[in-house]
Length: 604
Ligand code: M6R
Image (cartoon, rainbow, N blue to C red; front, side, top):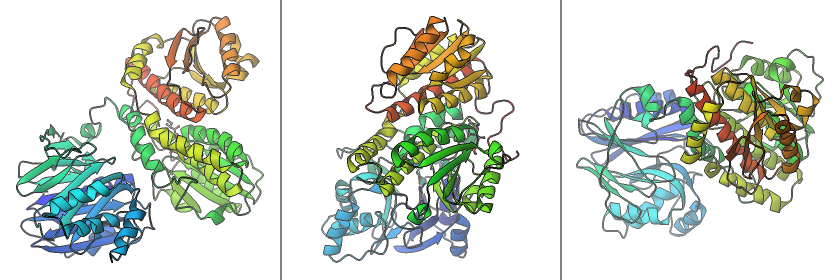
C-alpha cells in the first residue's frame, strides 16, 4: 500500500525522504518518487520497482541548507505501475503526493480538461495538483487555493502538496487515510503516513484527525479542522524504541493487529469495488478462460480462509471448488485436470508446503494464482497471477488481520467470477458490494465487547477441552477460532461442524467441556441452535456468540444484528481473536511469540 513522507528542514533531504520511505516499504509498493523544493526550484526523481532504483536515479543529487521535500511509495490502484503514474505528480509549479482514492476525480478531470489542463497520468491523484493550480489563479494565497481544493475533493485522502512560490512550505490534509506530523529538537518538521517513518527522527507527533489540514513551514505548523477553525497543536511523545513504538500502546502486536483490521480491510477494498462489479487490476480476465474448477491450497489459517472461500465460490460463481491442505496435497498423487485454476493462499508467500504445491501445479501445466500478503515473495514470483491482501506486516505469530484480508479478497473473487460467469444477478452483486463496503466498520472493536471478553476469559482457563462449532462458513471460522486458542493458550481446542457433534464428539460432553458456539442469525440459525441445545442438554458448558438471545447458554456474547451472514462472520471472527488473546494473557503466555511456533514455516 502507498506510503507518504515529508520534510521541512536543513539536513540533506534526499536521505531523510528515502529512509522514511524505507520504513514504509513493508506495506508493499510498485513505484516510488521524491520531489525537493529549494530556492524556488524543483528536483524530481521517480522510479518503478524498489527504492534502490529511486536511489540510483537520484544518485548524484544532494542539497545543502534549507529545503522542503515530499516522497511517496505507490501501490497501483488507478493506472499501471509506471513512472508517469508514480507520485509526486506535477502541475505547472507544484507537486503532490496522495494516499487514498479521490472518488470524484473523473468529474473534476473532465472539468479541468475543459479549462485546458493536460493530464499526464492515469491516476486520480493528478486532479489534486491541477485543481490547486486552477484555484491559484484567483485565490489570494496558495493556502487559500489549497483550502478551496480540499472542499471539492470527495473520497479518502492524505495529501502533501508543495508549490514553488512558497519555498519553505508543505501543505497537508488528512481525510480518511492516516497522516502524522512530527517535530524534533532541531526545529525540523516531518510527515509520515505511519509513525514508522518518523521514529528516531522526531520526539513528538500529532496523529492528524479526519478533516485536519494546514501547512508546515520554517516558522512552524498551522493546523485547522473541518470547520476551518485553528486547532491547538497537541503533540504526543513518540517513542524512540522502534518495537514498542510500533505497538502504539497495545500490549501485544496481536492486539494491535486485531484493532488494525478496520484499516487494513479498507486498504484491501481500495480501488477494487465498483458500484456494479469487482475490479482486480492485477488480474487478466483471460486467466479464467477454459477454467471449470478451482483448487485452493494452503496451510493453517490460510487453509481456513480457503475453506471459507469454497462455500462462497460455489455459492456465488457456481464453480466446482475443492480445498487442499498443502502438506497432504504434495504427496497424495492428486488427479489434476487442465481446466483447473490452482490458487494458493499464504500470508508470507514462503510456506514450504504451499510453495512446493504451487510448483507441482505448475509442473502439471495448471494455471496458477496466489493470494498473498507479501509482494515479491517466492509464491508471488512463481504464480501466473497474484492478488495482494494488503494487510501490512503481521508480527504476531497468530495470524489475525491476514486472515481477515484473505477472506475479504476471496469473497471479492467469488463476486468477480459471479459477474464474469453471470451466475448472480446485478442486484445481488450490488447488494454484496454494499456489504463489502461495510466490512471495515463491522470489524471495528467495540471497547465494551473487548472488556466483556476480558472478564469472561477468567472462566475459560481450565477444562478438558474446547469445541468451537459452527455450520457453513462458520465451520471454517470455528476451525480458525480453535487454532487461535491452541496456538497462544496451549489449551486443547477443536473446530467442528455443529451437525457432526452427535456423530461422536458429543460423547465428551460434560461441564468441563467448553463449547464456543457460533450462532449467526442469517445462516442456518434453527439448525445450529438445535445442535447447541443437544450439547447443553448433556451439561456441556456453552458460550454462545449470536446477535439473538439464547437461553441455553452459560455465557452469551451478543454480536450486533447485521443484515447478512458474511458480516456476522467477520464480527464473530473478531470475538474469537480477542477471546483467545485474553485467555492467553491471563495464562501469562507470550502472545506474540508462542512456544514452538514460527511466523513463516519455510521447512516442511
Ligand atoms: O504464511 P502462510 O499463510 O502460508 O502460513 C500458513 C500457516 O503457517 C499460518 O497460517 C499459521 O497457521 C499461523 N500461525 C496461524 O495463526
